[in-house]
Structures are given as structure tokens and as C-alpha cells.
Length: 205
Image (cartoon, rainbow, N blue to C red; front, side, top):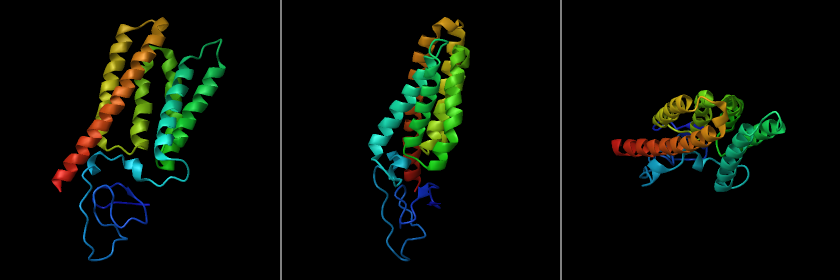
């Protein structure tokens, strides 16, 4: 796979035109008419056009989401009386990254940092900042452009508030629930920033 000289996104070797922006690739026929970019090109998931060796895009996406969150929750449920939850949760979290549609090297790169971050959050509200690592990993695997990473600020700000509001470890369940909701909101904000960025690029053409 190469990258589009126009928008910089990954291309399949068989494509004659970039499906994201419509620019011709090296495989394009000289003198061919350049197609207009699809009207929804700015909001299309970069990973949605990647060829999959098995399964459907939606099934793998939904399954990965469930496994990532379930794995993280199992890790947070770990205590001296439920140590197996730690290994099961970490393995489930890793499996979620393994099936998420995306470039293989990106998925492999984030498995350990993201899993370790969920373990570190066991230390309480003061460690909620570490959830920025799985969120950044999500943006990396989903091939989000740089503006989407600005949504990490929302999570970091929320982590600061949680650390001040819940200094006691006994509130960890509530902290995890709130932090999880903020992670989801930040992911959607990152998605929105991706759409806005894509549309702006289309207008610039």
C-alpha cells in the first residue's frame, strides 16, 4: 500500500483514484478523467475502505468496541479477591484491538500501551489521565487526522476534575463510570473534528 500524494491517506495498490479525495494514483490511466470526490468523502471513515481478510467491517467494529470496553471494565473490577479478572480483562482488551478494522502495524503498536494504561487506572482518580493513552490509540488505529487529537484535552481536563473531586480510592467505581463516559464523548468529539477537517479539505479543492 502507498499513500495518496494529495490527501496523504493509505491507498490500495489496485485503486486508480483515491476513494477519499478523488486524486489519481500511480495506477491511473494517463489522460483519464478525474472523478469528483463523493459528497460524503469528508465524513467517510478512513478505515472503512481498507480490504479485510475476514469478517465484515461493521461486525468487527462493534465486536472490537465491546471487547475493548469489557476488557477495561474487567481490569477495573480486579481486587485481591478477583485477580483472574486482570488477566482476562487484559486479554479481552488486546483481542479487541486485534479485530478492530485497521492497519495491522497500528493495532499491534497500541495493544500493550493501551492495556497497561487500563491497569494503571486501578490506582484511582489520580490516574485517570492514563485513559488518554487508549483514546490516542483509538485515533491512531482509526487513522484520524491530527485535529481529532485535540479532543484528548477534554479527557485530560475531566481527569483533573476527577482527581480533585474524588481523592479517596473508595470512589473508584464512580470515577471509572464517569471517566468511561468522558472517553466515549471524547471519541465522538474526535470523530466530529475528523468530519469537519475532511469537509474543509474538500472545500479547499
